[in-house]
Length: 396
View (cartoon, rainbow, N blue to C red):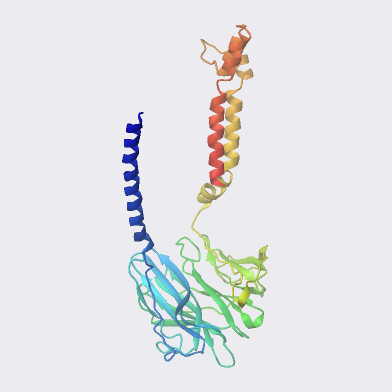
């Protein structure tokens, strides 16, 4: 290429690249300028919800959410108070996969909203009961007299798709309950489960060594059993339900030094002892921040075949790939069986590369040619090893 033509090529390329870069940079702010959709507000001020000199208004915190079909319900603390709880529990509901939202405050829980009697509320958790078509928001209610402490668990119910929450029910405290804490709720939504429609609430008694408590409802949260216990100390349990109705509760122990789990196979009538899964090595952060290593858990509806296909089989994939590679190499390099059985015949119908190499090198007395033919598969092996190794490294 001449200097002139080379120069013309460069003068065409440079403006093109410049235009491409400018267009890319111009498009970038479109993504950078996107704003998260606000789905809830704190309507309180220090005048309308004093609670404490350290109440943090315009602060909606510790959200939980649950979805069913195109519906999403989220719940959260509204007006967080430094020494525990919030002025109210807020909710946000979407019926169109999160495109639009309806939000408000749960009535009948705290004294600041809709006739409630408790001073504060916290630890909102959301569940949906498909059997009874009921959304449930579980909240821990607090009192301030004698120091802030848990007083009980209240359940706000909605039967119109999470748009209004007119009904509030309570879980009866067990005898000697001192200070309930860290509630969580789940419902059994598998139609084939023997306990379809059961809902389960986990909590612990903070004033009694964080004693585990589990209550159940069989009527869409309208009534709840007195909590059963396995007498173990736990904190932060999060119940999940298997398709066969077994309830499993991963949890931290009372000292937050280990993660364990307990379960029920009879619809929440009784609960197993807690089995330790792993110990925790945890470095506390500076500033006295609350950041305990509490667990989080979810479960899907996979059956035996799905578990094998998506869990067991992928874990065996490396072994299967290496086995397939070695089997391919050994089979393609096999001489003895084919030569003994057919000798490469009839009419070369069973002549493989190893057999051909042998016939040319030994009976045909062309050692060089036979040796060259025996190397024909080496490039194929190299390509196969390259792609299999690349695949395994990508998966790791």
